Every structure is written in structure tokens, then in C-alpha cells.
Image (cartoon, rainbow, N blue to C red; front, side):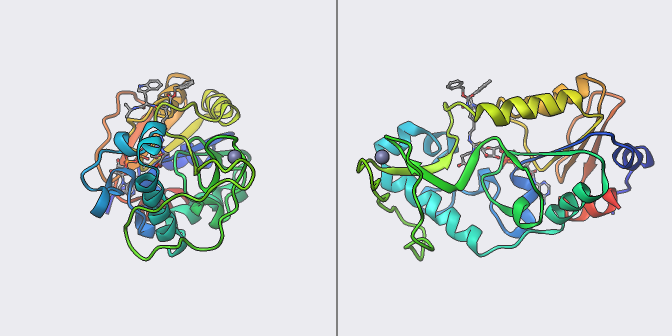
Amino acid sequence: MTDIPAAAKQAVRQARHLVVFTGAGVSAESGVHTFRDALTGLWARFDPMQLATPEAFLRDPALVWGWYEWRRQLLLGVEPNPAHRAIAGLQQTLPRVTLITQNVDDLHERAGSRDVLHLHGSIFAPRCFDCGRPHEFAGAPAMASEQALEPPRCSSCNGRVRPGVVWFGEALPEGALDAAFAAAGDCDCLLSIGTSGVVQPAAMIPDLAARRGATVIHVNPEPISVGRANEYSLQGPAGQILPLLLT
Ligand code: BV8
Ligand code: ZN
């Protein structure tokens, strides 16, 4: 059992403004593949950089759309885990909490978190690749297994419908990114939960907070190298660590 330094617990409890920054690891205990593990079966031979790009979608729309529909289908069958619920509980107890996620799932919202900043969009917000018109899903994905699937067509311009996520090489939603950087610069404590910290510009957020003097607490089964006195690495699964850290 990981012991939680008292100073880390105190930094959270006394935070005037807490930022919670999450990556795919916060959904792992719900049974959702982390980003890099979401490449199995048909997609096992690909690197995310080869699939999560507009070029990949234009090159092979059915392969890329099938990958997202497979992931969406999995998400329809899972529940928020104790990590999502512990984070949602913070918004009831602390004066100000900003929740920033790199994830494209809706598990934070389903656990009760509000005003979630999605830096990389949402798998539940498809839109037309050509004219940007939002597309309504017609119920659950029309697929039972991992397969390529032709994307639907836009009802207004007949363009292909694409996932509502931010692909590599695409700009992040400006409002969300500005708000995230502002919160990281203002907060006095930041929790970085379940992220490998490789995808930019999101990965700059914990470092920005630490440089401004905030206490930064990493939660990850892998050890995270910390360089500052005001940084902690709590090694373990978020679903076990967060309830201990936050109560
Ligand atoms: C852009 C949506 C410019 C799709 C994703 C410097 C500055 C700016 C850009 C760049 C730069 N350097 C390089 C770039 C380009 C690129 C980039 O970062 N490349 C990397 C690979 C080097 N960045 C971009 O292209 C970004 N766009 O910069 O645009 C621009 C500007 C103006 C105009 C035009 C263009 C866009 C990046 C967004 C990509 N889209 N997602 C989809 O989901 O399919 S990113 C994707 O990776 C996911 O969103 C995911 O969240 C994210 C990060 O991964 P993690 O969340 O960390 O997940 P991962 O699997 O890696 O790790 C899981 C972690 O959890 C592990 O550490 C594991 O140990 C831990 N874990 C496991 N179990 C648990 C756990 N932790 C806790 N508890 C557990 N139980
Ligand atoms: Zn259209």
C-alpha cells in the first residue's frame, strides 16, 4: 500500500485553487484501454501517430472510423471508477477545482464532474470532416467486433463524418487550452493523474504549475521522476491512491 505523504494530503486539502489534470490512466480501472493500449486486433500493427491523424482518415476512412467506433462501443459498456468519483467529490468540498482532461471519454462527467476541459475533444461529438456540421449518432455502433467501418455521410454536404477528437497535427480547442494554461498558472496545487506526459502541448501543464510554485502530485503505477521539492510521485493505480489522498 502506497503511503501518502502528509504534506501532499495537506496541499490538496488546503488548496485555494486545485487543478486536476488527467490522462488515459484515470479510466484504466474502468476497463478502458489506455491510449497506447487501444491498438489491438486490426489496429495492433499501427502506432497512434499513424491512425489518430487527418491524413490517416483521408487515406483509409473505414479503418480509422472503425477504430473509433470500436472504442466508443467499449465506452458504452463501462462505468466510472473510484478515481473518477473521488475527483468529482472534490468539486463539492474545495473552493475552486479546474478539471482538465486529455481523454475523449465521458467518464468524468458520468461520475458527476462539471465543466470538464477536454483538450483533445470527445469521441461522442462526431462532425462532418468537410463542413464541420455536428453529426447525431444513430444509437450504438453498428458493429460487434473490431472491424473497418465506412463512416456515415453528412446530411448537409454529404462529406464524411469524422470523430470529434483532436488528431495529431490538429490544433487543440483554443478556449480549452487557454483556460487550462490559465488555471495551471493560477493554481496552488495540481494533481497529474494517469498520463505518460508525452503528448504536447497538454504535457506542459504540470510543469507550468510547478514552475509557478504549485505543489504537483503525480499519480501513476509507473514512477514519475520529480525534480522539485514541491513535487510528489505517488506510485499506484489512481482508483486506489485517490480515495486515500483525497479523504
Ligand atoms: C498540435 C485524441 C499544433 C485522439 C490525442 C510541441 C508542441 C506542440 C505540438 C507538438 C510538440 N511536439 C510534438 C508535437 C506534435 C504532437 C505531439 O505531441 N506528438 C507527440 C507524440 C510527440 N502534438 C499534436 O499534434 C497536438 N497538436 O500541437 O497542433 C497546431 C497548432 C496550430 C494549428 C495546427 C496545429 C495534438 C495532440 C492531440 C492528439 N490526440 N487524443 C484519440 O484519443 O484517438 S492524444 C492521446 O494521447 C490521448 O488523448 C491521450 O490522452 C493522450 C496522452 O496519452 P495519455 O493520456 O498519457 O495516455 P497513455 O496511454 O500515453 O499513458 C497512460 C498512462 O496511464 C501511463 O503513464 C500509465 O502508466 C498510466 N496508467 C495506467 N494505468 C493506470 C495509470 N495511471 C493511473 N492509474 C492507473 N490504473
Ligand atoms: Zn458536411
